[in-house]
Image (cartoon, rainbow, N blue to C red; front, top):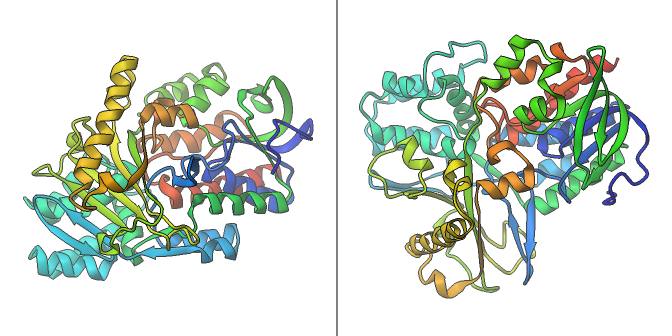
Length: 469
């Protein structure tokens, strides 16, 4: 991988991919493997997008956020990347919930969830089976008027404890809320329910390095520190991109940047029909998140009965507005043990909370720093319940906010999960407006998270391949 901006880059490519998140990297890999010349541009100094990592003094390595995805990631990585990457995906078996309604552990698959719902929460087995079958049978073409909240009310009327158990992990996985279309919940939930939750053993530093190597072997040119300023069109077709002040000609562009940023900042609405431009403006951005990164002193271990993922809340009931509030009541902890990153001698904890961009963006500099400090201290205070005397064991701690994610990904409002459901139709409709212009990324909740990003990259790569041929 070349790290110097545009070093040895050609003047013309079949495809230029903007943004090296998982969707962009996957699309680039498939297209390069198919024999097309591909230039993959990333404005950050490393690829990966939100599936990346950073290192701090003392050798601490942090994955950017907690990571959990369905078993389908194994098949997708084996088919569209390589077997070594697929074989590094392992199941997380210690999933815990702790809130005022219940405290329990699960392997997070259909059989175990069925047992929990019937034995612990006294839901009739027939109702549970009908709910799971309904979720698994949902399709993109289904009714989009039915909300997730209405879906729960159909099967579990008045059962807020059941809603909390089934909803909270999906909200953290992709920003889904009770007010979103039920289809956005059902498809993602059924994917997780098939065989549980998985992660990548060895950390995202190993994953992204393996992907970069694969891209290079397939002939793709990956260039970091390359900021695309403009997608240039002529006669209704893609002509070139302007990157770091240089023009690179191309027959097709795949943007893995934020959907609205792609349309209004890189392209310009003047190239679109009025109706499509209005449709794009109406797309809502999804929420962002905050993270607290905690490294324990080398040798300080956490009892593995603490779990791999821990969903906690002090709120009496599950409410979307409570999940997003700066007055944090709900946190999800991702525990990284030495087995998670073989060769390590330390434990890492990432605490995640969903958040609203405006709650952080409108703060003064002093209030912003104070807010981060409060987030760190309140998280450590809360974590002490699960990791006793954690204050004495910590050697490094820092926080990230929606502004942090905006800075490093350039996603509008630091939207961790891209756009709401209506973004999918706009993303898919872009090539009909501009020939050769495609978008892949986190859109529509369904196409978010690791598996959604990879699979959407596959879909778009196949579209581009057909267009080029």
